[in-house]
Length: 216
Image 1: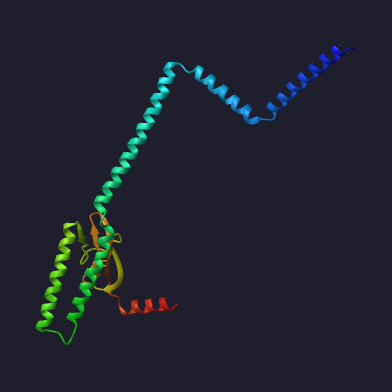
Image 2: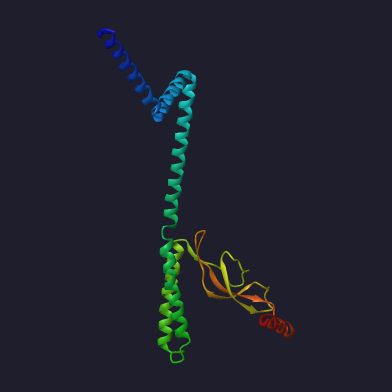
C-alpha cells in the first residue's frame, strides 16, 4: 500500500471517529434532546393553530386576566371597607377598661361606710356619673353600644353565664344579674356580657340528690 492510500485511510478513520464522538455526545445529553423535542412540538402546535384558534386562545387569556383583576379589586374594596368600619376595634376594646374602672370606683364609694350620705360622696359620684355618661355617648356616636342583658334570655353569642340564681318568678335561663356589661361594635362583638341566669328553685329532696351526685 502506497503512502497516498495510507493517508486517505487515515483521514477516513479520523472522520468516522469524529462522527461517532458527536453522536455519542448527543446521546449523552438527554436534556438537550428533550429541549429539542419540546421546541419541535411547540413549533408543530404553532403551525397547527389556525388564526381563529389563536384568537380564541387570546380571548380566553384576556378573560382570565380580567377576572383575576376584578377579584383583586373586590378584595381591596372589602379590606378598605373593613378598615374604615372597624379600624378602631382594638382601641374600643381597650377603652372598655375605663368604664369598668369607673363602675368599680362608684361601687367602692357607695359601699364606703365613712362616706355614706355625705356631701363629698354625692359630689364624687355625680362627677363619676357624668364621665360615665360622656363615655357612653362617645361610644354610641362610634356605633359602640351596650348589650341588653337584664330580663333577656341567655344568648351564648352575646352573654356568658357566670352563675345560676334560683328564681321561680323567671323562666329558667333568664338573665337576672349583670356582672359585667358587654358591648357590640356594629355587628361585631367587642366582649360578651358576664351574667347570672335564673334557674328553678330546688326542693330540699332535689338539693340532697344533687349533693350526693357531686360527692360521688
